[in-house]
Length: 273
Ligand SMILES: [Zn+2]
Image (tube, rainbow, N blue to C red; front, side):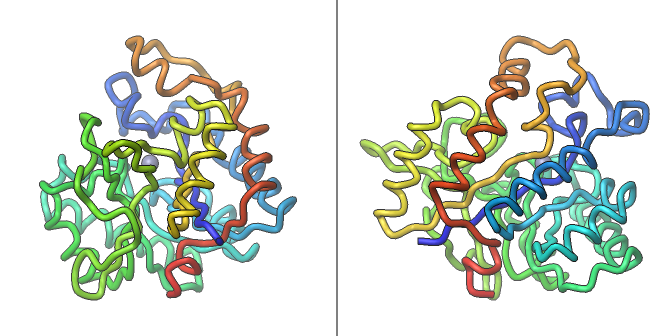
Protein backbone atom coordinates (compact mmCIF):
# COMPACT_ATOMS: atom_id res chain seq x y z
CA UNK A 1 0.00 0.00 0.00
CA UNK A 2 1.36 3.43 -0.91
CA UNK A 3 0.56 6.17 1.59
CA UNK A 4 0.48 9.94 1.20
CA UNK A 5 3.16 12.16 2.72
CA UNK A 6 2.67 15.90 3.11
CA UNK A 7 4.53 18.85 4.55
CA UNK A 8 2.72 21.98 5.72
CA UNK A 9 5.35 24.54 4.75
CA UNK A 10 5.29 27.29 7.35
CA UNK A 11 7.72 28.55 10.00
CA UNK A 12 7.67 27.98 13.76
CA UNK A 13 6.08 31.38 14.45
CA UNK A 14 3.19 30.89 11.96
CA UNK A 15 1.51 28.26 14.11
CA UNK A 16 -1.97 29.05 15.51
CA UNK A 17 -0.91 27.65 18.88
CA UNK A 18 1.52 30.59 19.22
CA UNK A 19 -0.79 33.26 17.84
CA UNK A 20 -1.65 34.80 21.22
CA UNK A 21 2.03 35.63 21.66
CA UNK A 22 3.16 36.24 18.05
CA UNK A 23 0.98 38.34 15.73
CA UNK A 24 1.02 37.88 11.97
CA UNK A 25 2.07 41.49 11.37
CA UNK A 26 5.22 40.86 13.45
CA UNK A 27 6.36 37.67 11.68
CA UNK A 28 9.20 39.53 9.96
CA UNK A 29 10.83 40.31 13.29
CA UNK A 30 11.28 36.63 14.24
CA UNK A 31 14.17 34.37 13.24
CA UNK A 32 13.34 32.81 9.87
CA UNK A 33 14.26 29.12 9.94
CA UNK A 34 11.86 27.63 7.35
CA UNK A 35 14.45 27.49 4.54
CA UNK A 36 17.05 25.58 6.47
CA UNK A 37 14.51 23.16 7.97
CA UNK A 38 12.77 22.56 4.63
CA UNK A 39 16.10 21.84 2.90
CA UNK A 40 16.81 19.31 5.63
CA UNK A 41 13.44 17.64 5.01
CA UNK A 42 14.14 17.65 1.26
CA UNK A 43 17.39 15.79 1.75
CA UNK A 44 15.78 13.25 4.11
CA UNK A 45 13.09 12.63 1.46
CA UNK A 46 15.84 12.16 -1.15
CA UNK A 47 17.57 9.58 1.07
CA UNK A 48 14.44 7.44 0.79
CA UNK A 49 13.55 8.48 -2.74
CA UNK A 50 10.16 9.85 -1.68
CA UNK A 51 8.17 12.54 -3.53
CA UNK A 52 5.56 14.29 -1.44
CA UNK A 53 3.04 17.15 -1.30
CA UNK A 54 4.07 20.55 0.08
CA UNK A 55 1.14 22.69 1.30
CA UNK A 56 2.89 26.02 0.97
CA UNK A 57 1.94 29.15 2.86
CA UNK A 58 1.69 32.16 0.50
CA UNK A 59 3.75 34.26 2.90
CA UNK A 60 6.58 31.71 2.69
CA UNK A 61 6.49 31.52 -1.13
CA UNK A 62 6.84 35.30 -1.25
CA UNK A 63 9.81 35.18 1.12
CA UNK A 64 11.52 32.12 -0.39
CA UNK A 65 10.65 31.89 -4.11
CA UNK A 66 13.86 29.99 -4.92
CA UNK A 67 13.05 27.36 -2.30
CA UNK A 68 9.57 26.76 -3.72
CA UNK A 69 10.97 26.47 -7.25
CA UNK A 70 13.57 24.03 -5.98
CA UNK A 71 10.84 21.91 -4.34
CA UNK A 72 9.07 21.76 -7.70
CA UNK A 73 12.27 20.99 -9.60
CA UNK A 74 13.00 18.12 -7.23
CA UNK A 75 9.72 16.52 -8.34
CA UNK A 76 7.38 17.29 -5.45
CA UNK A 77 3.79 18.46 -5.59
CA UNK A 78 3.09 22.11 -4.72
CA UNK A 79 -0.25 22.70 -3.00
CA UNK A 80 -1.70 25.63 -1.04
CA UNK A 81 -2.05 26.39 2.70
CA UNK A 82 -3.55 29.97 2.54
CA UNK A 83 -1.54 33.18 2.49
CA UNK A 84 -1.54 34.25 6.17
CA UNK A 85 -2.34 30.97 7.97
CA UNK A 86 -5.61 32.43 9.30
CA UNK A 87 -8.09 29.80 10.48
CA UNK A 88 -10.99 29.56 8.03
CA UNK A 89 -13.56 30.03 10.82
CA UNK A 90 -12.16 33.52 11.46
CA UNK A 91 -12.40 34.58 7.81
CA UNK A 92 -15.29 35.95 5.75
CA UNK A 93 -15.91 34.51 2.28
CA UNK A 94 -14.33 37.62 0.79
CA UNK A 95 -11.24 37.35 2.97
CA UNK A 96 -10.84 33.65 2.15
CA UNK A 97 -11.13 34.37 -1.56
CA UNK A 98 -8.53 37.11 -1.20
CA UNK A 99 -6.15 34.66 0.52
CA UNK A 100 -6.54 32.28 -2.42
CA UNK A 101 -6.10 34.79 -5.23
CA UNK A 102 -3.09 36.36 -3.52
CA UNK A 103 -1.44 32.99 -2.91
CA UNK A 104 -2.08 31.59 -6.39
CA UNK A 105 -0.76 34.79 -7.97
CA UNK A 106 2.51 34.46 -6.08
CA UNK A 107 2.96 30.90 -7.38
CA UNK A 108 2.42 32.24 -10.90
CA UNK A 109 4.76 35.21 -10.44
CA UNK A 110 7.63 33.11 -9.12
CA UNK A 111 7.24 30.67 -12.03
CA UNK A 112 5.68 27.53 -10.55
CA UNK A 113 4.78 25.41 -13.58
CA UNK A 114 2.42 22.77 -12.20
CA UNK A 115 -1.32 23.31 -11.79
CA UNK A 116 -2.19 23.74 -8.12
CA UNK A 117 -4.74 21.04 -7.24
CA UNK A 118 -4.61 20.69 -3.48
CA UNK A 119 -5.56 22.74 -0.45
CA UNK A 120 -5.09 22.30 3.30
CA UNK A 121 -6.73 24.67 5.79
CA UNK A 122 -4.62 25.99 8.68
CA UNK A 123 -5.29 23.90 11.79
CA UNK A 124 -7.56 21.63 9.69
CA UNK A 125 -10.41 24.17 9.88
CA UNK A 126 -12.70 22.73 7.26
CA UNK A 127 -15.51 21.86 9.67
CA UNK A 128 -19.30 21.83 9.49
CA UNK A 129 -19.23 25.63 10.03
CA UNK A 130 -16.86 26.31 7.14
CA UNK A 131 -18.26 24.13 4.35
CA UNK A 132 -18.85 27.37 2.40
CA UNK A 133 -15.09 27.48 1.77
CA UNK A 134 -15.35 24.37 -0.45
CA UNK A 135 -17.37 26.28 -3.05
CA UNK A 136 -14.57 28.82 -3.28
CA UNK A 137 -11.98 26.05 -3.67
CA UNK A 138 -13.98 24.69 -6.62
CA UNK A 139 -14.23 28.16 -8.12
CA UNK A 140 -10.41 28.32 -8.23
CA UNK A 141 -10.14 24.84 -9.75
CA UNK A 142 -8.80 22.96 -6.75
CA UNK A 143 -9.33 19.22 -7.25
CA UNK A 144 -8.95 18.16 -3.65
CA UNK A 145 -9.00 19.38 -0.08
CA UNK A 146 -7.08 17.67 2.72
CA UNK A 147 -8.32 19.38 5.88
CA UNK A 148 -11.04 17.27 7.44
CA UNK A 149 -10.00 15.58 10.68
CA UNK A 150 -12.58 12.89 11.54
CA UNK A 151 -12.41 13.48 15.32
CA UNK A 152 -14.78 15.02 17.84
CA UNK A 153 -12.53 15.93 20.78
CA UNK A 154 -10.46 18.87 19.53
CA UNK A 155 -11.58 22.45 20.36
CA UNK A 156 -10.40 23.93 17.04
CA UNK A 157 -11.09 21.26 14.42
CA UNK A 158 -12.78 18.01 13.48
CA UNK A 159 -15.92 16.50 11.95
CA UNK A 160 -16.69 13.53 14.16
CA UNK A 161 -18.65 11.36 11.73
CA UNK A 162 -16.77 12.22 8.52
CA UNK A 163 -15.69 9.33 6.25
CA UNK A 164 -12.21 7.93 6.91
CA UNK A 165 -11.21 7.23 3.29
CA UNK A 166 -10.90 9.75 0.43
CA UNK A 167 -14.39 10.81 -0.77
CA UNK A 168 -16.16 13.36 -2.92
CA UNK A 169 -16.99 16.13 -0.44
CA UNK A 170 -18.63 18.21 -3.15
CA UNK A 171 -19.14 17.73 -6.86
CA UNK A 172 -15.69 17.59 -8.52
CA UNK A 173 -13.85 18.12 -5.24
CA UNK A 174 -12.27 15.22 -3.37
CA UNK A 175 -11.51 15.19 0.33
CA UNK A 176 -8.53 13.24 1.67
CA UNK A 177 -9.19 13.27 5.43
CA UNK A 178 -6.38 13.14 7.98
CA UNK A 179 -5.87 9.59 9.15
CA UNK A 180 -7.42 8.07 12.23
CA UNK A 181 -7.68 4.50 13.48
CA UNK A 182 -11.09 3.43 14.73
CA UNK A 183 -10.72 1.65 18.07
CA UNK A 184 -13.81 0.67 20.06
CA UNK A 185 -15.93 3.24 18.28
CA UNK A 186 -13.43 6.07 18.84
CA UNK A 187 -11.38 7.73 16.10
CA UNK A 188 -7.75 8.04 17.22
CA UNK A 189 -5.46 10.31 15.15
CA UNK A 190 -2.45 8.33 14.00
CA UNK A 191 -0.60 10.16 11.36
CA UNK A 192 1.49 13.20 11.92
CA UNK A 193 2.28 16.48 13.61
CA UNK A 194 1.83 16.59 17.37
CA UNK A 195 0.50 13.02 17.43
CA UNK A 196 3.67 11.73 15.74
CA UNK A 197 5.76 13.53 18.35
CA UNK A 198 3.54 12.39 21.22
CA UNK A 199 3.33 8.62 20.54
CA UNK A 200 6.35 6.33 20.76
CA UNK A 201 7.28 5.28 17.21
CA UNK A 202 6.16 1.65 17.67
CA UNK A 203 2.61 2.89 18.33
CA UNK A 204 2.54 5.03 15.15
CA UNK A 205 3.88 2.05 13.21
CA UNK A 206 1.24 -0.27 14.69
CA UNK A 207 -1.58 2.15 13.88
CA UNK A 208 -0.46 2.79 10.28
CA UNK A 209 -0.20 -0.96 9.69
CA UNK A 210 -3.74 -1.42 11.02
CA UNK A 211 -5.12 1.39 8.84
CA UNK A 212 -3.36 -0.07 5.79
CA UNK A 213 -4.76 -3.52 6.60
CA UNK A 214 -8.24 -1.97 6.63
CA UNK A 215 -7.52 -1.00 3.02
CA UNK A 216 -6.88 2.70 3.60
CA UNK A 217 -3.72 4.62 2.68
CA UNK A 218 -2.68 7.01 5.46
CA UNK A 219 -2.34 10.75 5.00
CA UNK A 220 0.81 11.67 6.93
CA UNK A 221 1.75 15.30 7.66
CA UNK A 222 4.66 17.12 9.27
CA UNK A 223 5.97 20.70 9.57
CA UNK A 224 9.59 21.85 8.98
CA UNK A 225 9.75 23.32 12.52
CA UNK A 226 9.02 19.88 13.98
CA UNK A 227 12.54 18.67 13.18
CA UNK A 228 14.11 21.81 14.70
CA UNK A 229 14.74 21.43 18.46
CA UNK A 230 16.92 24.59 18.40
CA UNK A 231 14.13 26.97 17.37
CA UNK A 232 13.63 30.04 19.62
CA UNK A 233 11.36 29.32 22.59
CA UNK A 234 8.49 31.58 23.59
CA UNK A 235 6.55 31.61 26.83
CA UNK A 236 3.27 29.70 26.47
CA UNK A 237 0.60 28.28 28.77
CA UNK A 238 1.41 24.68 29.72
CA UNK A 239 -0.80 22.81 27.23
CA UNK A 240 0.26 25.00 24.30
CA UNK A 241 3.90 24.67 25.35
CA UNK A 242 3.54 20.89 25.39
CA UNK A 243 1.81 20.82 21.99
CA UNK A 244 4.53 22.85 20.29
CA UNK A 245 7.75 21.73 21.97
CA UNK A 246 7.07 18.10 22.95
CA UNK A 247 9.72 15.70 21.54
CA UNK A 248 11.07 18.06 18.85
CA UNK A 249 14.46 16.38 19.35
CA UNK A 250 13.04 12.93 18.51
CA UNK A 251 11.15 13.74 15.30
CA UNK A 252 13.98 13.48 12.78
CA UNK A 253 15.03 10.02 13.95
CA UNK A 254 11.41 8.81 13.97
CA UNK A 255 10.85 10.24 10.53
CA UNK A 256 13.72 8.20 9.11
CA UNK A 257 12.22 5.04 10.65
CA UNK A 258 8.82 5.87 9.16
CA UNK A 259 10.24 6.45 5.69
CA UNK A 260 12.12 3.17 5.93
CA UNK A 261 9.10 1.16 7.12
CA UNK A 262 6.38 2.48 4.78
CA UNK A 263 5.99 3.57 1.16
CA UNK A 264 4.94 7.15 0.46
CA UNK A 265 4.12 9.41 -2.47
CA UNK A 266 2.25 12.68 -3.17
CA UNK A 267 -1.43 13.11 -2.35
CA UNK A 268 -2.15 13.71 -6.03
CA UNK A 269 -0.68 10.29 -6.85
CA UNK A 270 -2.61 8.52 -4.11
CA UNK A 271 -5.86 10.10 -5.32
CA UNK A 272 -5.02 9.26 -8.94
CA UNK A 273 -5.24 12.89 -10.09
ZN1 LIG B 1 -0.31 25.12 9.01
